[in-house]
Image (cartoon, rainbow, N blue to C red; front, side, top):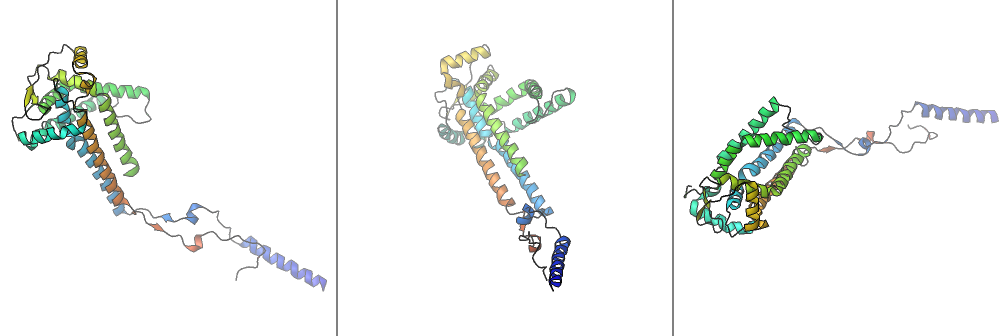
Length: 316
């Protein structure tokens, strides 16, 4: 009797061990088992993201090169107005000047030289490409480039600017002279933000030097500019600077430190408009791409099982 009971217990234990050994192993818990998996984007969704990113890039280019041109015109006129009483250090003082210029000269008053600006931009790009192809100087660098590459890149930019200085000076005259009444998220946005930040910092830091260069460019050209004090009259440019050092000294002693920053309010207005356009582009991008990768629920059969007891009777 006892032997039969012991045999039955051994047989039950053998049966349970057999069930435990033959049972399929339970996969290790992973995020895929617990959370929803993302479906790969469809071709239509990929096209939407691509075209949205292209639209963001175009809007940034529009803000940087076209919409900002009136601000550039105002800024340059303020910089070369050597005897101006209003320095326009904030955008608020410029609005009445803009209204007066529009009433006196029409809608084209602030778009002088816009076509030539794109011509000079093309010349700069062409020159940089030629230098890049014919020398060791790199046209493009990355965040991982060495210090030597950065220096060589700056040298390329300097040579390109020096070669195109006559064209730049001609465009400067065209933009300031009076007209006599003639009427993809991780890769795209960081690059646009870097361009915006780099442009803002470089323009702000080099603003005094730009003021000096613009005055020297116009010296002796008999250029007549708009009166940036009130926007109603015109004034001739009659300066006699003897060089860069003399120009720096004259501005400092005659106009003060803020004389180097005449028209900086137009620069602030320019980048404020640029920031608004970038913000709008980011909003549109997020709106069009939101919920474009719908989540699907994992079937219950793929979810991890509860704790398994090897001595539990087999499932029916």
